[in-house]
Image (cartoon, rainbow, N blue to C red; front, side, top):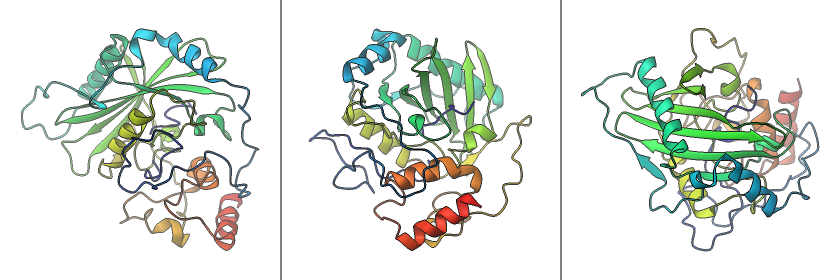
Length: 305
């Protein structure tokens, strides 16, 4: 699905959306001043930004609560829900069945109201070729020594039900391996190419479409910091969805400072054009730097051809 993990989770993760909470701690690498969530009119976007100005905080609160009001807006001290230790001592590499069991377990914890989710309307969910309407998200994090797990519970504004997606990062390997899947009840379907389009380097930081369309600004920052703190991982492609030949990677100097074979983040290919266009246009990428007109022209030429 194109919508799978459209916000979680990153090409680069550091700058956060405009979360206006005076006492929110700033994670390492974030700007001291929150950035406005508006288009810079860079010319990179294929379509105009989605206009959701008519969408109110009341609409957001009411729609988000349809997942079950007891499951969201939780009191918290830590953004991460602790899981029991893995049953296999000295495990070196989780099995696919163990990964699936973790995914089903965190869905169950969310449904029982035993997790700490942040709710928002995601920036990328309302842009370009993904979904051009409000997309409601509940994001929760779980962890033990063997696995670090992200859960996304997501629904389109015109959707009839909430969908469940998960990333399990196997921490018992070096480098860690990230598994992506959609969960339906106890059925887990691993995903490859569609999730890789936005998640070449792991989960995306939280980028709300508007600063007021997020339930808990401090929690959003804390979860985004948790994402930033994770090591660079390897994307797991399932056997039935192997990676195609993505061609030559982006070589723009401003990008390959981080996105390179030996960089802090994975190389970028044209398959990543959607998040590149959106995150650069909205000023999140590169972190703490704006591309010059010449660099924008070079990037646009590469994306368009």
